[in-house]
Image (cartoon, rainbow, N blue to C red; front, top):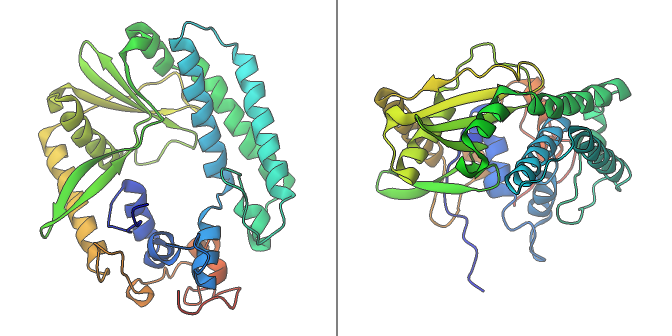
Length: 324
C-alpha cells in the first residue's frame, strides 16, 4: 500500500477554519494526522478522535443534505417519494444519531460513520432539551421547504436528466502558489443544466446571511464549473436556497469575469498565508507554534480541540498538550 502523505490542499472550509483560528486549522490538518496509527502519539490520537466530532448544526445540516440527495435520486429514477415519509425517515435518523451519541462512552473513539456530537462530549458545550428540539425542528422544516421550493420546481422544469451534480461528489481543480501546485476541493450541492447555461443551487439550513454576500463561494464554484464543463462565465449562475426560511425564493446571481479573477486571487492569497506557516507542504510538516490561536473566547468554546489546546483564551481541559 502506498504511503499516505499529508500534502497541502485548499478548500473554502479550510480557509474559513484558518481565519477563525489558525491553531484549530493546525489540529485539523496536521496535529491529527496519523492519529489512526497504532504508534501515534497520545496527542495525535486524541486530536484525530476529536476531529471526528461534529456539532448539532453541522449534524442536522448534513442529514438534510443527505435526505435531499436521496430524494432527488428517487425522483430521477421515476419514483414519487411521499414528502411525509421523507420527513419521518429524517426524524428517525436524527433520533438514532442522537441516542447513539448520547449513550456513547465519553472520550472514546466511535466506529466509522457514527455520529458523535460535541454537545455530548464536552459538558461546557451541553445544550438544553429545548435547544435540541429547536435544531431538529429546523431540519424538518428544511425538508418541508425543499418540497415546496422554487429550486425543486426549477429542477423539475428542466428535467432530472439535467442534473450535472447532486451533492455527492468531492472534486478538485488545480491551483498554484510560488511554483507549488495543489488541489482546491469543491463540493457542489446542485449543478443544473438549463437553456441559459449552468445554474448552481446551494442548500442552506441556517438563517439567511445578513450581507447576502456569496461572492467567494460563487466565484469558486464558477471557476470550477468553467473548467469542468467548458462553459463561459456569462452562462453560469448561482442561487442560495434557504430551505427553512424562504424556500419559495430563488435569488439568482450572475457570474462575471471580475468575479472569477477575484476568486482566483482569494484562493492564492489565502493559500499563500497558510503556506507561510507550513515548513514543508509536500511532506506535511508544520509546527504547532507557527499557528496562532484565536483571542475570541466564544470561538474557543465552540472548538472541538478546546480540551487539548493550552494556548487559547480558555486554556486546555486536558494534560494532552505535549508534542504530537
